[in-house]
Image 1 (cartoon, rainbow, N blue to C red):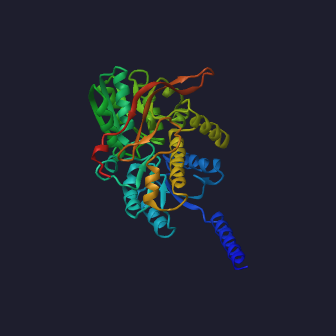
Image 2: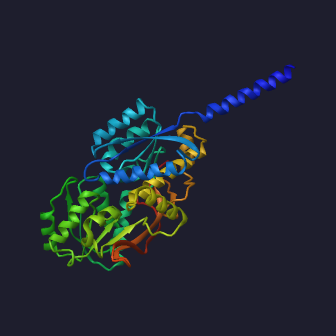
Image 3: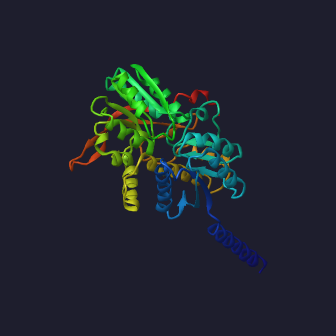
Length: 389
């Protein structure tokens, strides 16, 4: 009788434990991102793609129930920092993602990782955090800021250009952009300018480009400022005279729709495109189109991959919020990226392929970004050797 009672008690205890596990509170994931202003659609695409990955798994990531807590940083570093502090202290959040702009990341990410939480970047990846200031709790699924512009420099070299005029906003990502382009461009830089991050009038810059008369212009202006730049480039009569080579952030599906024929013929380099032929990308594009009925952007793909990366970490720890264990699981990159081949380098930034894209008209006469070749294979970044993890 005693044995039977003990067995009954054990069975009851196991059932209660299973029920408690099934009803456990979802793991909160803090998303700090830019949802307003000229760059607002970048954060919106990251958020919506991340949400899509959760919905495709029935409210879970890696088999673990999750709750996405989203707040708008307004492209203000101080605001991002305050949100992070509140999420850490009040909400007890241990997993973060979402930041679009490097100036916000610079003010926010160090506080997150120093507090013992995990940060997985779907976009911003400033050079300082890739090198000597790298951290075991900091992962990037997008790119290292320099590397995407290195691909543009290599693309410009491959296309035979010899004299380049280059310009970008005066903040960390802009500085990384020009450094990255110059690192792989084999010609001469005949003009170099920094613009303001909130700039909308580029008349003075157009005049300087015209005066320098380069073979090619390389510019990095993401979101709404990129739309303004391209429109004014066309209005200044430069579009048909001086070719332009850009990296992914300067021309995405939203920018293309906004500027129309002003983008025709532009050469773009990217780690992802909607036409990449792999199962993960096909599944993502089908789900995105059904859910949102709008073009997917690079930011969409990165938000989705960030969710898959976090899912792989949660699966690896069975949902336990042990950050060192999450780091270890995440480092394996045990997920199928929409861009194809993907792994983390020694500084926990991507090693990936880069493709040449071109704006062309499709069979229906609509503008589209078409993948036309590969620029770099298994490309890492220039700062990995400085990282000691």
